[in-house]
Image 1 (tube, rainbow, N blue to C red):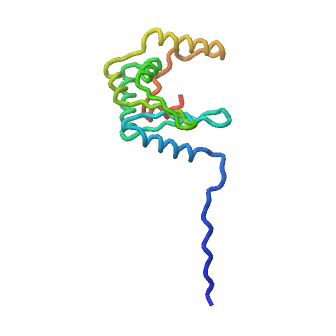
Image 2: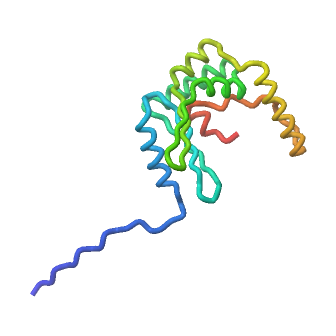
Image 3: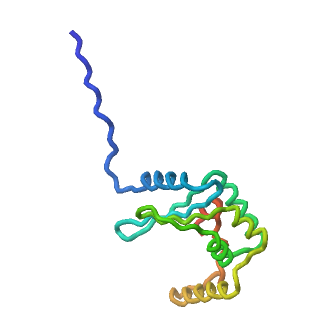
Amino acid sequence: MTTAALPAPPLLPAPSDDATPVEKAAADSIAADFAPETFLWLTFRRPDGGVRIWYAWTAGGHSLGDRVDRRALAAGYDAADWLHIADRHQLRRARGRVEITAYPLRPVLADVQAGVRAPEDRREGIRRAVRKAGELTGQAPRTLTPRWLGFGPALTSRRS
């Protein structure tokens, strides 16, 4: 007499406090809704009041974002210029607790190629903020205008 093997119960994911897989799936889903050559800055708002930032790129966005960054750095662009250009082209949306800021990279590249720079009053505002932060922390700033923040993975993945 033979006995039939009982089917194994389905594998269920173990409960976890790690939101990374869910955030990654959401980031991939959000990126699918945008045109090619787009850089996405995704802010995941957490129930505890914290946030986690994810970067994503649509097709062609990785290489184009890095190309924009190389040109901007070669031209001496800094954080003031990044903020100015980013503000000119950003598209903002929300999906639940996720805030989405999308940057179509072709117009960003066109601005860098055309020499678009931040106005002096905005640049001075950043310098004032950096000086004030130095006063509040007791630390002398290394520079009054931080570096270009980046639109491509080579710069956005750096931690300095």
